[in-house]
Length: 158
Image (tube, rainbow, N blue to C red):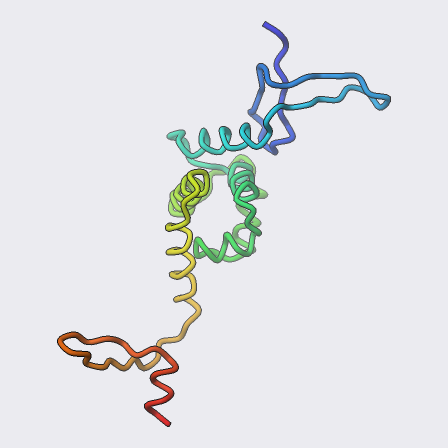
């Protein structure tokens, strides 16, 4: 078996490749070419979310960047502050809180599968945190009641 490659470019300390890479000489020293990096990252992400081990800060960062989310965006989606998310990511060896861990696994699973229902639902829930409770009016429509949206409500009050 050939020598394995410690894939530090992932930002994770424990990822090694046994094949799928080529080490070559450059004028600046040794270089490495990795085949199908996108596929490798997807495989790493799926591995992380299916392990029965809590995620740590480095794994959180890896999954977040794979989903192309900023710290602010992910924090808003999972109901944390940007500062809290930043602290979790800096704590490379520490496990992230259970609720955030489970939400992140669900988000990445959805991302890797090309589905966005969970993310959209979590974004709507995050939006609810930013909306103050206000008056809601309902209108009877045949045999059912329906809430009025803002423009309809404004028209009725005018």
